[in-house]
Amino acid sequence: MPLYLCNARPGAVSDTAKAQIAGDITRIHCEATGAPPAFVHVFFFENGLAPDIGDGTIALYGNIRRGRTDAQKDQIKADMRHAVHQRTNVPLDGIGMSLQDVPASWVMEGGDIMPEPGEEAAWLVAHEAKVAAAKSA
Image (cartoon, rainbow, N blue to C red; front, side):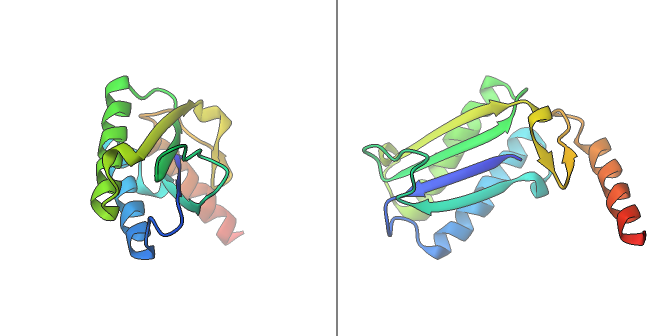
């Protein structure tokens, strides 16, 4: 968590661009929210059922933890659309973007319920200790 899906018309996003866009999405999300990069997941599809491309060329959809401000979400959407435009040369009006808030308690990462925004540091310490204990058992 967060989970970002990119659905595009076939050939609109090269394999090179996919790797670059995944890096951009991770960076943008982390800069806007303070979340650790390891939390960010990005998947690409061509002509997938969702997110709906509509009349556009590329559609981005993100599930993010509830608690982000409208300003953070607006910045994420604008920056991600711009990054996709830069990597693909698809006009901005051909790139759709939407975000959905999801309660942290609905999501697991590495077998543990996700922390609320701002509680990542303590969660990471506890999670890493759990993983280390499991490895030594």
